[in-house]
Amino acid sequence: MIFKMKRILLYLILFVVLILGFLASYLTLTFSKVFVKKPTVTPTPTTISYTKSTPAPIINPKGVFNLLFLGYGGAGHSGALLTDSIIIIHVDTNTGKVALISVPRDLWIPGNHKINAEGSINGFQNVGGTIENITGQHIDYFVSVDFGGFIKLIDDLSGVTVQVPVTFDDPFYPITGLENETCGKSADEIAQLKAKYSGAQLEFQFTCRYEHLHFDKGPTNLDGTTALKFVRSRHGDSDFGRSLRQFAVLIGIENKLISLKSLGKLDDMINTLSNIVKTDLTAGTIKTLLNVFGDPEKYKIGQIQLTTDNVLVEGKSADGQYILTPKAGNFNFSGIKSYISSNLQ
Image 1 (cartoon, rainbow, N blue to C red):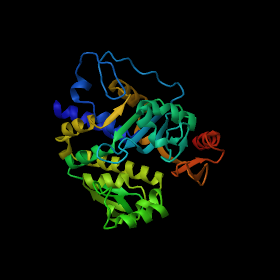
Image 2: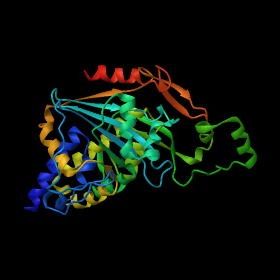
Image 3: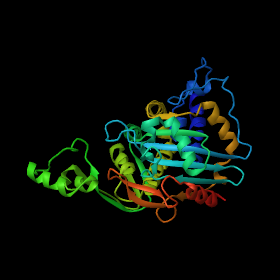
């Protein structure tokens, strides 16, 4: 019976990954919470709880749903709560289409900060309102994932095989613990560099603080530590490229779960993910949505990228940060809303 229940849960996990990227959310539901009645617990934005009395969610009569996916580095990394990945997963059950709408982390927003800092300032549960104002897309649910927790998750699986979308190099991936290393430079040399450079250009003068990452396009085997570098690398490609890499790792996890050997490790993975996920989804909501979405194979997945080729321009903030702003003007998101709307039709 237990083995059968694991097979059922595994099927649901695979379904969720293929359609919504809910892998992290659904795995945090322990078998007891899903299948055994428990005392009522009031859901909060930082936990998933379930009771048989949980009311069914209100289903959008138009059959359109938007999930906000946020990925952040986690403890032990600079900017631990800054979001490396901001993706709206737009599902239209009427047309059988899914669109991954990538919002660049460097987008400058009201409050005079980058969108990637919104979660750390106002809480992940409140980022959806900001995203709605920018994109014009109503956010139904959010899922935030601590990518740092991927290390243990992937090591629990004895590594995963990932399809690298595009060959890329990142010569400036920061080495943890060497953030303030002088790299043999004297105080006078450092002072001269500070007078000449600022921001990232100054940091790049201290090459000993970084390692060179290289990944060839195609399948590659990653352990937990390397997978984290793979999803966090910033200088090898674009924000959208990073989003594709992060989803490639999710698919790698999915593929590993297919093997029967992984079933025996499911409990450990559930415990790991329960510590790295924040969401406003409940088990009851997920189970209802699974019924609404139907067959995962009927969906066609597309991508919408906000870039300088369409709706954004590069610039610098008053304090010298690299930022992206709308072509329509600072804080004027009308062009972004129109672009997304037209590409969803």
